[in-house]
Amino acid sequence: MDKYTRKELAELFNIGKETLRYYENINLLPNTTRNKSGYRVYSEEDVLRVKFILQMKDYGFSLREISDLIKMVSNDKCANQDKLVEYIDNKITGVVNHIKELYQFDDYSKYVSTAFDANKKLKCRKEVFPEDCKKAFELGKRLVQM
Image (tube, rainbow, N blue to C red; front, top):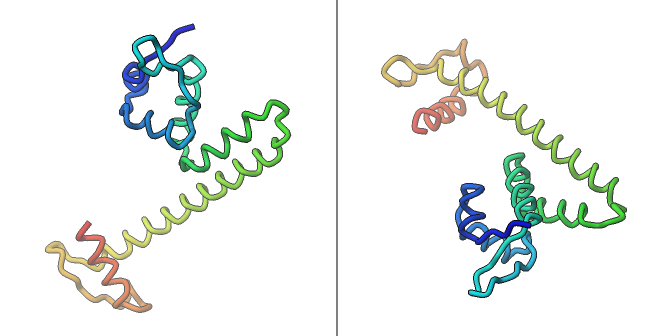
């Protein structure tokens, strides 16, 4: 079984050593052993756990949510299987809703951008903003400043 130093594990996943230290501090990584020189060494199981943490982060899970997931799956009997499935389903639903909101924002930002001329000056066109021109213009100003 291979053993990795903190530096080696950080390089393996292209993350900072401080990130691993943080994961240890918040108990996402269990207590690691130390070699004769006093350096922390990580096992293959630790490698798989870090890989899982990073994948879940990529999927949009917070570190607290990842911690909850790890607790659920580390139960040998998997008595929390229904809870785990519900937890993941809720996260997926949240992500899908967020995607819908982003599409709506994208549509609205395109709509607002039509209120500007080539010099980025606002022009009021009632046919573009039949409802509440002022709010749309304010949003448009913020979009241009981004």
